[in-house]
Length: 303
Image (tube, rainbow, N blue to C red; front, side, top):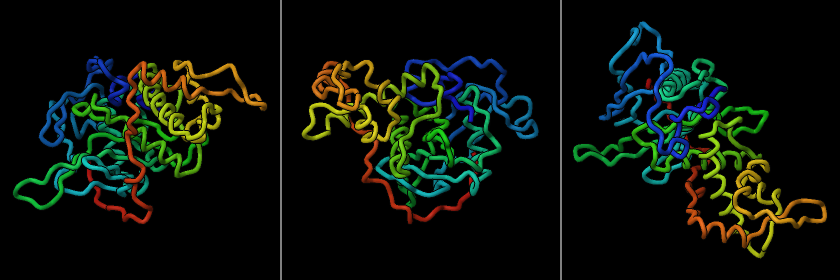
């Protein structure tokens, strides 16, 4: 699946696009602005909406899938106020997944999977809005998502990721990354994002990986050193990704275990965290994941 990470687009998620301006599209945009709830904002790229729907060019596209006043499609898998995550099966909710992909293309450069969505699950980041004074019903708004192949021979836990522009640069992308690794843990296999990463994607994931690895190592009790493989198993990360995260910390030592495995110094990790004032707060709390018996919502919506 071609994704924003592969394309080098600055439009996916906030840690990947910090300090980036809205890019200049190479192909003329066929939708100039979108309306999401009560927000109007510009698109960045051309999307493959049929011409009979948007014409050759349209000033505004009203995205109906704001989920305000209605329950999001799919199964609720995580909820910690003010955000929730819903899992949407692309096969069961084909129209929704196609519309979500077409909408995402307005902010991703080379995303190409729009119609063959059955082999993917989509994980919606939903903002739980305060109840209005005249309503007792909870209101919702979808503000981002990531997609994941149902069967990945490379153990990819994330294919494409996007936080919609009005909510970027708030650390919300790390919530989606954290969920992707919790899914790897629940599947019992080490995972990581689809590769190769773009330069911006690498920077965003590096920040996430560094904090995750440091947090894991410092939480290892009665240990002064750990092997790279031990850390990878504890993080549910691929060993190569752990090595990338540790490269700039100076924590890799010249010492090795009898079997040749490289050792990581816990003290060096602590010094690196203090020196760079790294925030080790976990972006998600695994205690707030719901069990598998949570019923799925069948409401079909169109972005």
